[in-house]
Image (cartoon, rainbow, N blue to C red; front, side):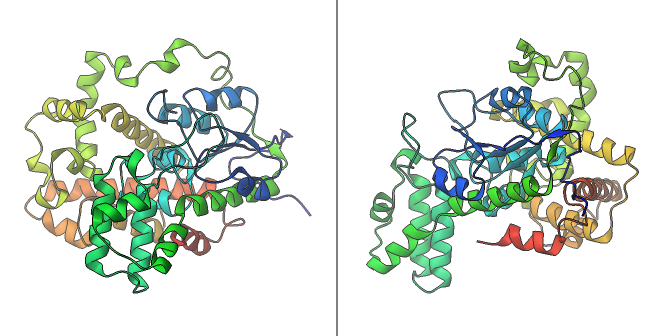
Length: 405
């Protein structure tokens, strides 16, 4: 029987073991029980993905990444490696965040946390960061905020915690610096007195660990399906790591290029629903509420420290649209429906129809939103076509995986 082909993988050379960047999200034994031949590496730093791609590895699972004192792995690096033909899966922590950033380039996000980042229910690295001893592998010394949120909500649904106590516990966790975020300190700050059984239940919810195992199983599916790695699609991309790779993308934009992209970049921010993050609650403003000039909006986002990341998302989005058009892909109704739900949520609307109704004063705005909806749906079609071929993954089952846990 012929081997089924894994996403993005061609039949040219022997498949090398997957590389897993792992820190406090899960014990190495959890990953090795699913991927016994995996190469386990510490939390990813800037340049790690490039280095292993140069060594011809083609399956990468990013779970944890370094924050703070060292350069974090950048969206540019993740996109480069995915574009070069490698399969990159992200989950749990930094991996979930980068998968959300880079999904239009084909990076696969797996698990609850990745879904929450992708749908912008959460958006900050503070949700997943923990304190741990870097010199030893790598148990977390504090509790990630996302575990607290989901543990408390699950306890509330089971009737173990009153809604008022749930809100106080989450507020207390948010108020603490991640280095102080332990269950003992959180419950003390919240002034909540819970039973021993309830506290045991809360401590037992570890979504980051569950997502890590789920992502390892996704890599195992790919590793089991294919026996080969893809050839590099760009002959010189990974030849030498010159200084340009470490330069910020903003530094590479000259004034002429900036003038060319300012207007389309700012409009994309509005269309995608991302502008509300910088310019106020998405429920309270419309396109005419943007600053009067693209320059003003650009400066506001630059001052937030997020301009480089947003420019990267904008670039990936544009390139994904062009690739879908080159492949002459057309979204099906399910792609359009998913795009409508995504955009409605990003704009703070209850539904796509409600979002369009808010733009009823401006037919041009509605038309641009509908065009953007089609582009988002086309990218979803691109990802479905090349990452989840119909002979490999049942889309309804994949949806259940995203929502499990």
